[in-house]
Amino acid sequence: MKRTNKVLLILLVSGISYLLYVHTQNVNRQLELIYAVPDKYTQTSPEADLVVLDFNKYGCIFCQNLHPILTEALKRDGKVRYIPRTVSGDGDEWGKNLIISTYAAGEQGKFIEMHNAIYDNWPVRDREKLFAVAQSIGVDTEQLSRDMSRADLRKWADENNMFFTTWGIGETPTLIIGKRFFRSKQDKPSVEELLAQFAKAR
Image 1 (cartoon, rainbow, N blue to C red):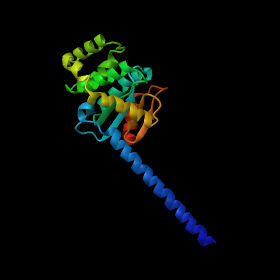
Image 2: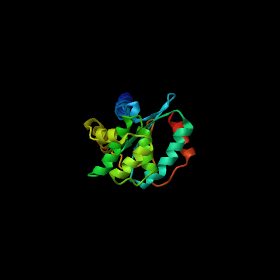
Image 3: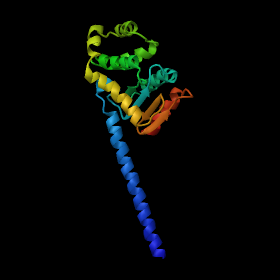
Image 4: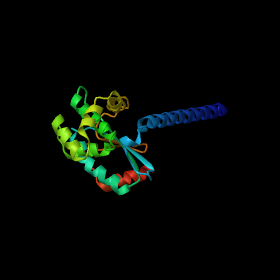
């Protein structure tokens, strides 16, 4: 009887270990997919040893509160590959256009500058304001207008929303710091707290 219990215990532990292994492998594969973004659509340090992915929404007050703090933490750390995956609400076509504009600006080497400028100049509620913001950071607005109609750039906005939905993220802002989720909807973290989260994830 004791021998049977021991065998069952070994089988149970082996089964749990296998399931944990499969789960970990699946998470790693999903992270590879969500992190698969060209450098021109990121803010990347040549010495980066950590990825920080940011699910955010331009109209979200909590995202607006977090953005300058996150920007300062990234600057102070200096060794992060930062990937904004900005999302829009269902049926929010203008919100999607704002996201597409950042990828279109990325075609001119100004992705992160455009992303930051939209936050810095919020609210950006029409094309005239958007193009004024773009001009202020040196973006060619004629090229921007053409590129904003490109299907391959619209795909990035759709993909951001797809990951946000299928992963069940549920709220913005949500950061994935390495493999760790960090949500900041209620309390505004300090720069030091974010830096500590970066250190934990390494």
